[in-house]
Image (cartoon, rainbow, N blue to C red):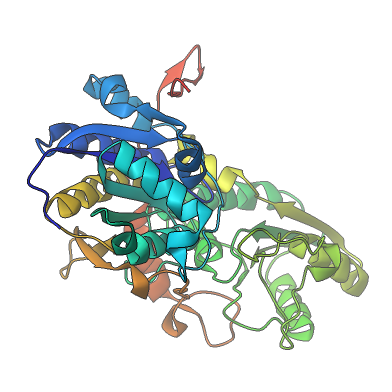
Length: 414
């Protein structure tokens, strides 16, 4: 809906943070400040949780110069704070306390524009609020803005945050390959990389081979069932070439019967969306390899640095993250709602992208898997087509602010 009168907007961040999520926030702020249709842009602390508490700040007042936006863009994690709150089902929403509180808050503060930066579960929030809006007699435009290092959102070519995470992973793998190559004793290093259902992040380890041809010996993604005997045979083949073997594995690796490889190492706990907390895949494989080969084995879990390593951020990723935030505001001002802004890769030899809205109902709770032609026939590595897809996303060095030789990040005054 296009609103004739000036109104206010609100933005929140949700789900796991990334290196680039604040660049997207900066894009939302920049476009909102430039608009003559938005009076005040509010920032909600901890996403929908903050809206329910009415815990917000006036971003229009805080960001009074471009320098602050630039420094925000270079700061990792979610400056507004995040949450993993799952809104109730939309049936009978007009009598639900959470929905009542949210729309009372929107009405009281004349909020007509809603921007939510997040991944799959966050798009579920956008979809639900869009669906129940009419029942509360308050017209609003709800626009999701993509974010996830997992790169698993449907309809968008890639997600903000993925390029920087991929760059960090490829960089660390390259450095580890140098380190592990100095000895002549047989040894296996197993690197566990984030990825619950999809292997986009683990696939990025293969980018280590781009400059000098030296990459991981094997890359195992959750898009393929994992088989221990094939795994051991792969390692035997690698030992014929060199003594030091490096393998990248997704944390979500599973056997043919659906059991997770790292299941024995996990607590079994789940979050509010029903997702199991994953860890232990590399450690489980370390134990298995040690028992089978009797050689030196090391497991490494990259863990949180994958999503917060601003010192290794991709310039392309940061710039696109800012742009998709700006595009979300522009689309909302033109009446778009119940949608998520997508990044569309343009045709042509030179890499470029466009930004277009897509129905959030076709994105929420859906998963974009690594396609079959990105994975080799044996299921133990990725193809050149996959590398060609990823390479432009890690390009360029992002601005990184330091003071006294250390990071100098931007913080909001909550």
